[in-house]
Image (cartoon, rainbow, N blue to C red; front, top):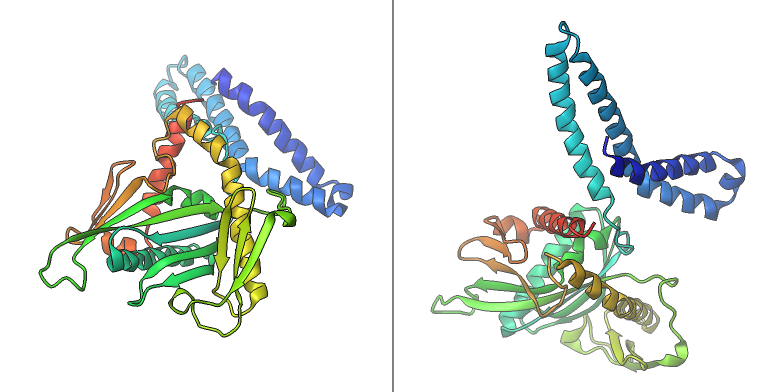
Amino acid sequence: MSKTLFDQFTPIEDHFNDIERQLSDPEVISNNKKYQELLKKHSEIKESVVTFQEYKQVCASIEDAQLMLEDPELKEMAKEELETASSKQKELEEALQFHLIPKDPDDHKNAIVEIRSGTGGDEAALFAEDLFSMYSKFAESQKWTIEILNQQMTAIGGIKEVVFLISGTNVFSKLKFEIGTHRVQRVPTTETSGRIHTSAATVAILPEAEDVDIEINTKDLRIDTFRASGAGGQHVNKTSSAIRITHIPTNTVVECQDERSQHQNKDKAMKMLRSRLYEVQVETQRKEESAMRKNQVGSGDRSEKIRTYNYPQGRVTDHRINLTLYTLDKIMEGEIEAIIEGLVKADQLAKMQTL
């Protein structure tokens, strides 16, 4: 057994066993807040503890097989057992190494997704709408829910900008690598000569900030009301129901005009503001960590070109991990799991290099 892994995971296993004892304590059970906190910790480390326990069993099997090698009658059987157990031991060691990777504290959170059309005019806006559809269908496949916070359409039905909240289990952990510039290469429907155009849209993913994550002083806010702007919202109204909030210290501006109620628009705008301020708060730390380990999946900068969707060739290429898939139709229908898994794995490998 690797002494290093044993030294690292034994305290984790002891802590896990202690949590299990506390979870059966009547006093803890009656304290709902403490019980929920322990339940969350139990869930966070259970998988690593189960893997470690399996690893210890395999190591014990190897020791037994090595002793059996000394018996001529059991030697052949011992060789087979040793080969199987050694292979399993290596597999479990790799799994345990992944469990040592520091967890992103935001991984469990919901995500606020912002999609904006970039270079390419109307075609870029249509592509932004395609991306919105892609993420919506992926969210549906994950049994997540979507709430549109703000939306500005173009005259031909494309999207200038859409901001929406995706709620569910570990949303941010799966979507956080989507940040950046998405490029499309295709023949626009308005192109009569059949020439391929290149357009772009930017995607930002923010972890939904909770009240405990960031404190906002109402004195630092300027709140303006205005009328919904037709093509910019889902409707036109005669009252000033749209809301614009400015956080004066950082000059951060958010607005929402998607709801008919001023109160609803204000609530949605505050969600956006809280998450943007939280992102600014942790951005410096993330950049420092990313620079330290030369993050393979990119800096998370919206100006960075991360992916190309080439319609004539039916391919999608993620430039950060050199992954090319010729399943464009399925990907645009929300089947992006393979890309996400590749990005998560690259990120884990990059983090492991610093362990």
